[in-house]
Amino acid sequence: MKLKHLSLSVMIMGTALGLASTQAAASGYQFGSQSVSGQGTAHANGAEANDPSTIFTNPAGLSRLDGTQVSAGATLVVPHSEYTDTGSKNVLGQSTGNGNGGNFAPKAVAAPTFYLSSKINDKFTAGIGMYVPYGAKLDYDYNWAGRYGLRSINLQSLNINPSIAFKLDDHHSFGFGVSAQYMDATLNQMADTTSGLALKAAASGGITGPFGPGGANVTLTNPSQIAAVMRAGGIGGDGLAHVEGNDWGFGWNIGYMFQLNENTRFGLAYRSSIKQSLTGSSTWTFNNVQGNVTVGGVTLPAAVAAKLAHPDASASVDVTTPETASANFFHQLNSKVALMGDVTWVRNSRLQQIDIKQSTVNGVAQGDLVLHQNWKDTWRVSLGTNYQLNDAWMLRGGLAWEQSPVKDDQDRHPAIPDSDRLWLSFGANYKINKQSSIDLAYSFIDFKNANVNYTDGCTPAGVSPSGASCTGNGGTVNGTYKTYLQLVGVQYNYRF
Image 1 (tube, one colour):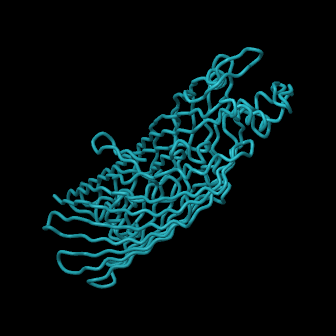
Image 2 (spheres, one colour):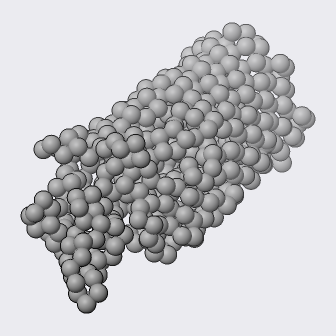
Image 3 (cartoon, one colour):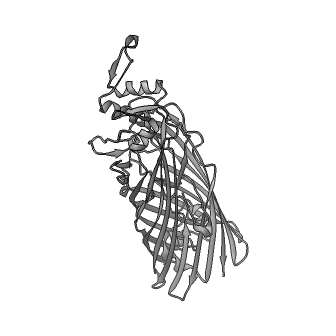
């Protein structure tokens, strides 16, 4: 199926720049670095406008750039995340095992960036940026305890952002840009076939067999007892649901920069939400489901019975990415030291749930697959500094605190086990000659330990608490995540 947004979880830079995937480094599904020079100050440099990457932070900053300039870089993301299960259970209240997911975070991936600016005249400067706005990638073991909540997710994105700036006078500049945003998403989730068949058997009157003392025939109507009998008889197992898709969406961004004097400036920037609609197909496989079951008086292989309940179907999902608003400052304290800061608000509350709709096939209505998230709006506050060591070297540093959009443990889904985090960043700019320089950056991002207690609101028999048709596994993922990320960035800058 084509997933539309960044809610199911990493990143794509187009065919010219290649493809990259990683765990999200900023809150929610946002990727944490669209500029290596900005990364060196923990992205406190929104009002610095020292290279074409200002296209992302504030397009009004283009008015400060002379001639034609190019910045191209890449950020290597090295994630470390551990999950410890503390009692995940299926819809029948039975343990799903104690598997902790294995090495579910990618070892390391790189996300590229590219920016170009060109001064048209004293009033106008144009530019274009290509960068990764969102991303997430997790790949758990097939038998991990939370497999009925998620098996794997891969979200990739690319934003192409042409922009133009207008310099009104020595104090006021304005910028405007448009965005063409591409997203590609894949979701895999194990299907609790055993519980689903047991629930359906119970709903149809139970099963009768030699289950009583001395092999006496009795009728079992309790789903847990039926599931136990099925497992003892080698009936059941896990299926797999696979959903994938991609789409383009369009948005815009604006910026304003006020130059108080040659040493001090302030910036305001806003980036719009982007609506995307993905359509495609959901695919179900039950190759590992064993045994036979009786459905409506007809005995069928359990895998066939499960497939009849879950035929491949067309699917769609609509998602809107959050808008952002930023305020920042830059002050050149003296010939050596510059101070800067940024405050950014993100309207993550747009993302309350991901509602994947599946079509009716041969009279079978599977219902929607819903991932509830119930996110809140978030803030990021960052402070940074530059230190001009000598003519060739400028050193950078920054510290940032960033909120997670997840409200509580019940809303933390294993697709994005997000939590509040602290950034500690260091960077440097080395001037090779008058035309070219290199930016380097290193960031350590420490996530607050996060508990997950996520319950699927749909049973594997396809019934929601309200009685509506739905798709899901029921049950609860219960555990703890410990996560940190390291970002290493390199960027080359050239002035024509």
